[in-house]
Length: 337
Ligand code: UD1
Image 1 (tube, helix red, strand yellow):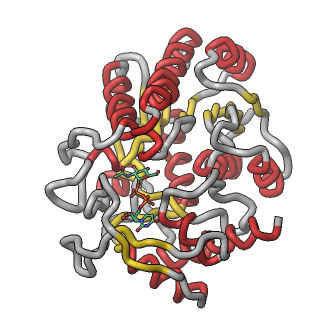
Image 2: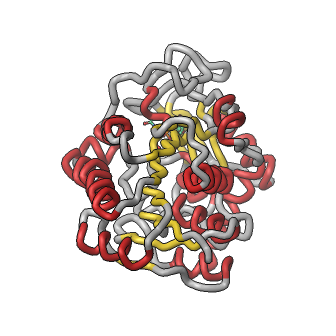
């Protein structure tokens, strides 16, 4: 019988791709998602790729009764906890909403896990915990910096909560760098609600004519071309990292109960390099202008991936060109619908 994996936020951007990869790796994904930042159309995409709709419950993870019943009914081997809010700016405006969803949500998941005797968890953390690092690339041992936003604080708190529960809960804590791209078939991708905050959805919507122009937030930073540098990672690589993390948990291969991994490519690209790559790969111009710096932006951050490569046995396989191609194909698909 297939091992069941409960995926909270399984209809979201990273969750939906991970559901497909879990199925392909021989697991049975079970989804709980309250559609607060996702859409049922993601289920259609999942079905088109795996041939059926996985079990799905429309509920908030804070509803511990529903979550408990789901766990009693399915007895998952592990939980991947994606369900969380992720917009930095919004978290500054609505901090309580972020703490409620991201921190109380994690506590609910842990309480139900403990009550039901489940002890394997994969947690979505973020490179935001490093803040503006003193040195790049960042290692898992690089000291974290005070959070720049309530969103960042919720990720730091999540890590602390999980470390404090390591006596009974085995955690794979994955610090994502900048996830972009889409499924290569364009069956799944990111569905930003409203005006996107992040670079790639804004860029693809601009090229699609939905936005006038992309603003590059500052070109006077201390980087080779003056624009900020990030470690962009293809969402399929990220999804595959989750499968590796789940396998490590269910095969009981963890060396410590709380394990931390950087999930990036190890390569940093500037905003202008991203635009150039998009233009070259898709043979289409990106209307853009240079604007002022965005408050709170980190100048440069990219991952040292030695630990994840050697210990988890995972390496990102897809390059920036592929990320640009898949992001654009996804936008084209959205236009058709
Ligand atoms: C932020 C968070 C990250 C979170 C992610 C998802 C930090 C340091 N990072 O990533 O943890 O997971 O959001 O919400 O808190 N840019 C432009 N023009 C635009 C949009 C972006 O030039 O219209 C630039 C930004 O200045 C930045 C780069 O593109 O240099 C990437 O920005 P973005 O996609 O918003 O992600 P981060 O801010 O890096």
